[in-house]
Image (cartoon, rainbow, N blue to C red; front, side, top):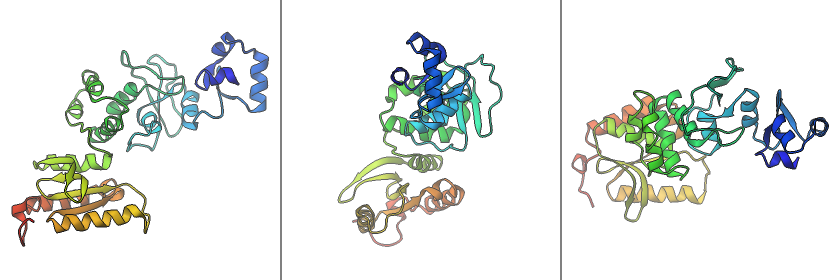
Length: 285
């Protein structure tokens, strides 16, 4: 149905009627499967992403972690469907696996009838998850170009109490939430932290703690024999040749087994392995 496509794929009965769609036309489209009825008075094209259709069926728009994930941003919380509903909505109960958000911020509204705006979704996320988890997504949003750093920082005044610090730690150079977590660890330990550091004959490395402790978080699937894997091996060898201590970490080690990983990093810093002066043998080349 062309009219529905022009309305971002989701519309109310009233919107369709104003566009000239008759009740008979709508029934025929639903009966043929060309249009889906999501809830009373709401319809969508089958091409609309499932999570967005589920959000409308729940009485709102896809938002928070779910809305940001739909935009391709780095999101840690994906266990539930996050739906923003109007503050005075009668919807008070969600189905299994769905979390409703009622709060609204002036100037931060939905982008379409099924997807919340980026700013609104970021603020919902900040109110919903742990500050470090939100920082992972904020870094991703700025690094990807989804939002300019200045525009993100302008939301600080709307941040929930106790979460303003997240804006202070946003790093536009951080390319994934994995890097964000390692960077935060270094700062908690009181050591210098740098992101995307250029090193001669190596290229840019993801995170450097102190002077020589290099971390390369790897969120890619393992592809044995791939050109990228060979390049990783070359980089690691060159880093070792120059005296750097390079540690590659998997997604599991940073997310599921973070306590163990953080303890190892703490031990390295405690032994001053992050400093050139902490090397046990030889001199920096």
